[in-house]
Image 1 (cartoon, rainbow over the protein chains, first blue to last red):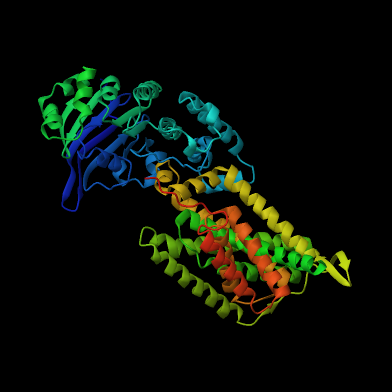
Image 2 (tube, each protein chain N blue to C red):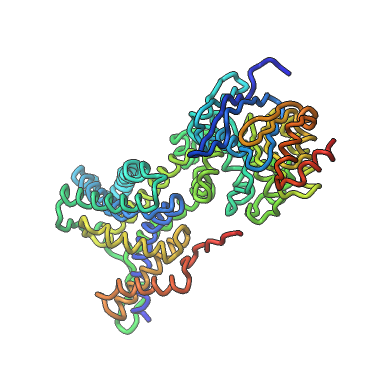
Length: 279
Length: 304
């Protein structure tokens, strides 16, 4: 791997909720141009890590340093919410679908490009009167939206309400919407949840294409088939602590990982089976 | 027949004014889920600013009525928008994230502050304006009853429709409108997409205040007399209109405004003037019993 600073460096991240420690002294790195998967049994603290990265939670202690491709370093834990997407260029999706169901598919993708279209209030006011560079920016935004609609195969549904799409299409649209913010790091929280095998294959392909376009990914996923196939690097959490960190093959053969998945009687039945299938 | 037509004309004019104010209520409710009780008072301030503007301009020797109206409208909208922005900034934003009733109480407080501010600075008596746009034309005549449509009524309707058209375009077609709708549906997700939600909310108040000012100016021109208390009654009516149309729905607010205006005017024409408010609120009660989310409101369907 390259010697440059990692895209995202999580250092000694601790998150406590009252007496409960959800994440404890966690450190890992997500390198630029890679797909990093965060896995672990339910309740391991994966989503909490995501919530810290994307500004939903303020970590109790520790640091989250993002290094943009232009070399600017940002401490994510001290950025206001909208700056995470705007300045740090981190985008995310959720376990449950959070599309703007009442808006059309295209509008969902246009909303994500608001900042590029109206960076300032003055620009916004000018745009109201049809002045400034709003028109050309709008055209660029529509082109970008069209590009992603094409990628996710929803070009012909651009003007339908997002809420009317089938489940799998809504999942893909969420990813496309996150990509429309122009991120350097895309955080996906269980993107394959609820997808059938064909849809999760399509998802894997989409994620590989996104990586190919230069966006790095951080992925929480229970579908081990997807994780093992596309990840460059896997971080395993259990009870808020990192128990393993390495390539998919290394992690799969780590006895601590096998113990965490098999030993605790977790309800994740499909996970070990999936891991073996991928092997 | 002719009499009914006259009442309908009057009702529509009144309804337009209510509708413009109601849009402000419904917009703020949609985006942050609170009733901005100070909105009626922004309308009142808009009316006072218009009166001041027209007085100053005539003192400056601007005699062209359309020019004076246009300058006044722009200035009054700008200043009232500043009021709307300030109210949100000092009374609501610090309370964001606290329990639901806190901003509501703060809104009632803000309403009292604005009313008293105007009462103290402008006096409590009625202030009058000479009719600026006299005349009108005869629509029809039947059995000696002449149906009049005044130029004022035409102007109110046209101005309102133009404002609503601009506003609809803003909400449906522009990036600002899209981010407003996004905040309305899922404010946290909007933040994650990089939308500055505080700024979007501020702009919502600014736009609402500008529309209320247009309504205030129309009210001033139509009735020719204003005082510090007009914001309360008009505000309550417009709020009723917003609820009747389905709070959160923009076309609903306009429809509700027209409905309240028509009910008031027809009731005044055929039944009794003192009971017109009773009629309006009774209709609200009946509609809400049978359609709890209002005429055009979306029912909250929770997926389980």
